Image (tube, rainbow, N blue to C red; front, side, top):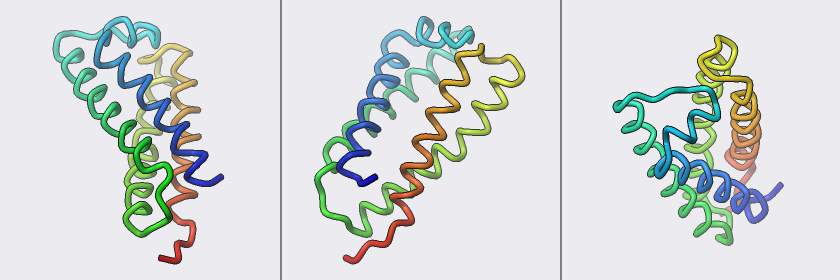
Length: 125
């Protein structure tokens, strides 16, 4: 997979989750079996705003030529998804998240694999 194929997919995924978390965090998280108090709503909205920002970034750089700077973006996104993966997995296993949490686990695996591949792919800049 190359960045021109993967980045638009990542952008759409991040944007969709970002909008849900920013605009309707209680409803969005309830689909995962998670109830939010006022602090949870605040944190969900902050995460939603960040995800929308990353979606815009991924969309804007989708056609750039490979470069060390772009590879740094891929590495940061790889690390985010890799770090979030055990958090979401444990939350699903322990029942903090409902069975739909496995879709979030799969999503993080997909994104970590894609960004990991792009992070460590040789770049001749």
